[in-house]
Image (cartoon, rainbow, N blue to C red; front, side):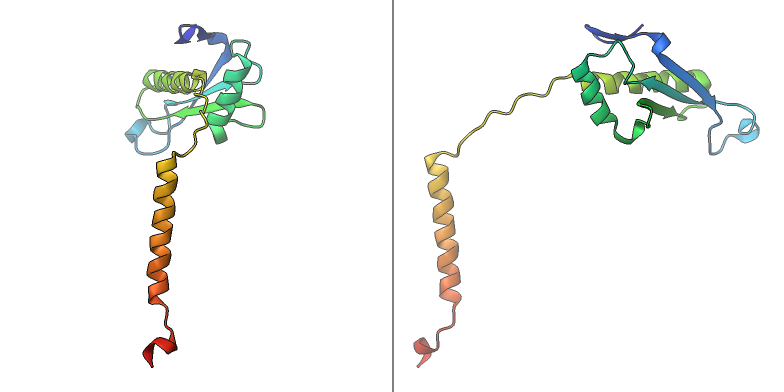
Length: 141
């Protein structure tokens, strides 16, 4: 079990790891060792996720979710397969923690009487400045 929050955990059987070759410099081992990790987690079919967390996760993950509803996380930061595996798991756990947080409800507020008066005074002052800039030929004769 991968613990996410005190009430949410993901079973290891829901995670699928693919080990691939990492791009970039790596010396003699670059074409031999598959140290990069692709973690796949099927969001749509996971029994561990409540529906509200599932919806928030889909929105948070964005382009990392493929057509099949799988979240794909690619980790190739480290030189060893084990470190990249842990990095992918950490990134999945962080994403799930963010999705598990319920957004705070917005409280509707109204501007105060003073704020309205200040805004109108500012508008009047700006209009007065523009009025004084106007060119009127009658004033110059």
